[in-house]
Image (cartoon, rainbow, N blue to C red):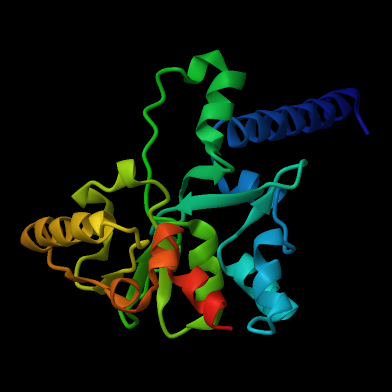
Length: 234
């Protein structure tokens, strides 16, 4: 092989390696599918009460983790990715914080990054199936196996509940399952929220009142959600 061919091949290999390194750096600067895949996991502690009660199996936990692309940190915290309907990861909830906060703390150049959020589970949206929305991501994941005839999503925190959050669900039948509380304040909040969303978008949105009708005062004091209610019945 001639010297110039050796040089060209070596330069090409170095360029490809550099391009791969640059691509990896970009993929791990912002939320990305490679980042999602890098932290995938299938075993989660929040499933343990359901498995112990016999209501769900380990196989169902693995199936749900795969559908929702769940991850886990090195310390064992679950990572709940917010992936939109175009399969673009926007952010992820880790404990009481967000991966966007961690990335910004690691990279000062990201300070100007305007983080957008979507419903957890939005990437699973299907016009042919009704959609259920709860507060906690873990609740949505478990309900997806308990009631697979519904696509389960979560809003995560109330501050994210602007009407635009539900805009991608136009044309869908949507039910929100609020936590209960002693004063019904959460339920009333969502009744107002539903009126606002239904005026703005082509969404058939209703608020489920199961907990307001059937939860005990003790359960309302605990501000239980629908999974807590199901476990209490087991």
